[in-house]
Image (cartoon, rainbow, N blue to C red; front, top):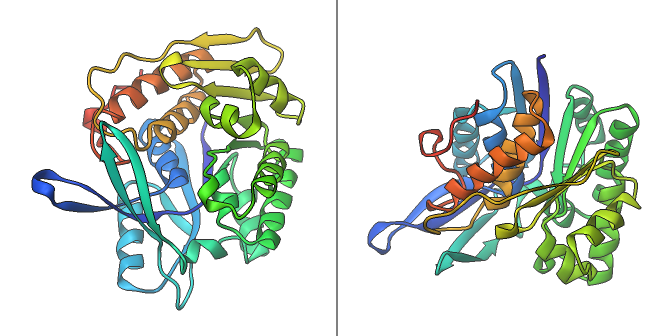
Length: 306
């Protein structure tokens, strides 16, 4: 059955390592990465749209052209005079990454400043995806606007998917970070957290503790990503399932491991796969992605969906 997905967040200019010590420019960001992989593996009759804001400068124009070239829709991307996309650089050491950011004038910080545009976009789709980074870059009033719309979508029966994707450097205060992330979870029907983040910032002693905490916030479906330990699924009242991680022959760059899982997982759910089958496929995609540089890996380098 045809359907549609909307991903909400920030796409940035990405500078990554290339051969010979050079830097290669790309475009990425957790929610756009998720949209990219969802578009790769979703059924052909599904649409995947992106909601953000960019400037009117040349870099913004190039970013829009790139997004359109991936097959992700740009109809819900606002153009804001005097603003530009944010930029980040990936630093790699033994396959693990760290980042430097330049995003003080990022247009995406204003993505929820037009409530009517936001509501119109959400009303048109079946699945909405957002992340903790989406919430972190917004002003408090804009967070309230976005979460109010997502709660409305949840109440109307839409699938609202949230990855807490905890990045403490983006928050001014740890208590506000945790409170806002919990508010994001309450607005969602599905959660895709990473256990390492949850253990570090919420003190969860186990994957099961993460699941129970978020179930207590009203989240129906949860898939906890735990790196090499695999994924644990709790969907509705069905039996809890564990899906092993896919084998990885060589780690090059762990950028977008979680995002590629998110996008391919949601895509395969849209195609009718069971949560366990969708998670197993998404684990194979993530394993392939971390064997290459950069956040967005070409389709031909990834596993084929059934």
